[in-house]
Amino acid sequence: MERIETLEQLRQWRSRQRQQSLRVAFVPTMGALHQGHLALVRAAQQRADRVIVSIFVNPTQFGPHEDFDRYPRLPEQDSALLQMVGCHALFLPNHETIYPAEHQTTVQVTGLDQKLCGRLRPGHFQGVATVVTILLNLVQPDTALFGLKDYQQFVLIRRMVRDLRLPVQVEGVATVREPDGLALSSRNRYLSPVERQRATALFQALTAAGQLYRSGENRRDVLIDQATGILQRAGIHQIDYVELCDPDTLATAPEQMTDDVIMLIAARLTGARLIDNLLLTAH
Amino acid sequence: MERIETLEQLRQWRSRQRQQSLRVAFVPTMGALHQGHLALVRAAQQRADRVIVSIFVNPTQFGPHEDFDRYPRLPEQDSALLQMVGCHALFLPNHETIYPAEHQTTVQVTGLDQKLCGRLRPGHFQGVATVVTILLNLVQPDTALFGLKDYQQFVLIRRMVRDLRLPVQVEGVATVREPDGLALSSRNRYLSPVERQRATALFQALTAAGQLYRSGENRRDVLIDQATGILQRAGIHQIDYVELCDPDTLATAPEQMTDDVIMLIAARLTGARLIDNLLLTAH
Image 1 (cartoon, one colour):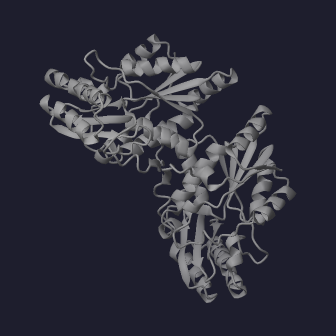
Image 2 (tube, helix red, strand yellow):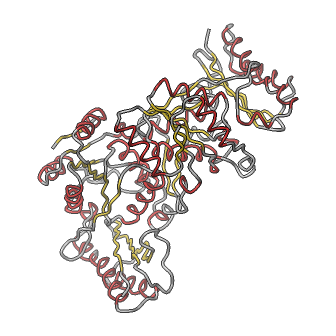
Image 3 (cartoon, chains in turn cyan, blue):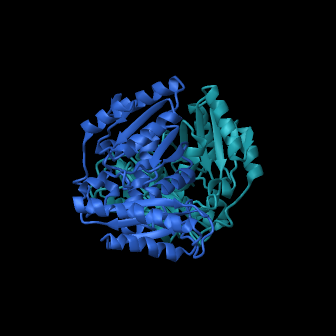
């Protein structure tokens, strides 16, 4: 696996692949890699001849009181994991490589960046949209892959790539879960054993709503109440949102639902804020 | 000259040039072409094997009370002019091609888009930055050329391309002027004969400031006062700004200047708002 730190190294690597007409798939990450990331790499390997992963803990997507400083940074462990799964290149830019001193351009997906997590984390999605645009333009992949666990992020990036006509295909990869259903996340390590147990309620709430919808209950608010109840009974009280949305646009689902909808949950435990989602299919 | 209206036609044209390893230069315009635009095409011909011009009157860079509706649209005349100067392709997208119904992404160059014309035309540079990003990603040229007459726009686009790492070279082309010094502009046609005469004061003010600076006068405010006086004596009283700035960053020049500076003027006549600028070189 090639370790790429400078723009010049990246340019050379990219142009070597181009000369050989090799398709390149790109997986941007913030590191602290887990099986969810490795599933992205494996999906990338199916879709291209070469896979490049970036690790950059992007400061502009963290709020002033969020966990930027304590976000786990494990470059050597990450590098070993990527090597093991057969990743071809690892791009490790430093701050100045992404944001030179004079940097002042931002990308906004107005509307999508205001709802759900965007409402609760002002500026977060502007940070995401901007860094992803920069990374895509630097790496110039044929395909870029994003985890569906961060569902709003996925929809927003897909929208942005279409709107700005970035010449890249965007693909979402299914969430990887612990045996008890908890979605893998670099932030799960912040949870105490008790909270780790509680956290399984997110997936329980999602699957219960899914069953209810398939069984014929199509009232939006009934499904939301049921999921909220499951979270609360598990001892999760700081619920940022439980919402049902159109899977493509994230518009709020109608009161009486007929099509597939996505249920999205965000809740704060003491150690970490967790998010999860599930596509609920109509019966 | 090829006339390109759809994205599929554009994709085919672009990939034909790529297959032949031909360098492509791009000149985005809003049409109503004059010798200033043709100078851009000629400069483009020097720098690449193929030149493509776009004509798109971009609604998002006009303010609610500006001249979007009456902005001159002369596609057949423009097309004939481009054919005459040997342009290879003309891209004429319609509104939906650039902004599909669901479009919601914008690009902002925060800072540069707040000063000078940005202060007086809120949203203007966000419209410019967004449409130029879209056009650059659609056309994927090796080089894109912009007139230095719209100096702030040029600096902002150059900054944006660097910040977002768009894989294109940005180049500015010198302003083309009438024999009496008036900078060519599609909006000059809005001027009455009396105003057309008055409008020459912009270039007179710029050149007088340039002479004064070269002669050793280095106080910013003295140069600005002199230029303002020339405008006023010509009967131009609605002066949006007369400013001296760093040519690269557009930061306000220091009170005692030592380096090259750019003087920028914007003034409103009855028929049209005019802008002009000149690089003043230190003696």
